Length: 172
Picture 1 (tube, rainbow, N blue to C red):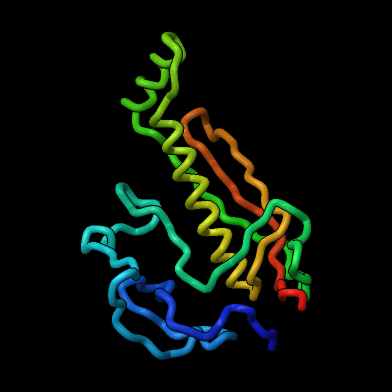
Picture 2 (cartoon, helix red, strand yellow):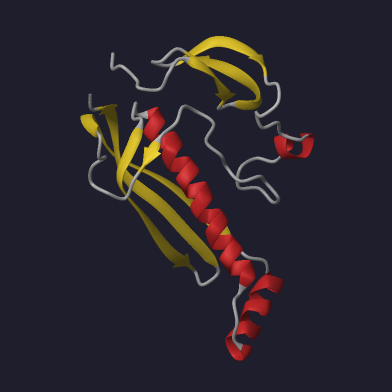
């Protein structure tokens, strides 16, 4: 079994952020406790919204820290294991009224703030999913991270965050 550099402690439970779950340094245990201050708590509306459904909250990674860098290495760290490519992807569509508003921006100029928010939220969500994917394969870092953005059917925006999952350890 590989040794994690994430210290043993209580962290928000990835499946239920309203409670804390104990991370023993190598993996999640079966120990839970109520979150008190600081840990995100989902509202009833948010709990009922599945990811990707209308008005669903953005995905957020709640596990042990995952370092993400666009470099091919981590200064001050040694790459102990390489787990391979991981990614997080999200596809979103704007509503018809936002598309009309953006169409007017092409005539009159200016920032299409609705689309800026769409892409910003999409990048944040794709990055959260990337962290979860790296954690799922045993990594504590992602190197050579990149974003890839595409348009689908002229109506949707796809954002992918990808990189190489690794286990990094601090150099002495």
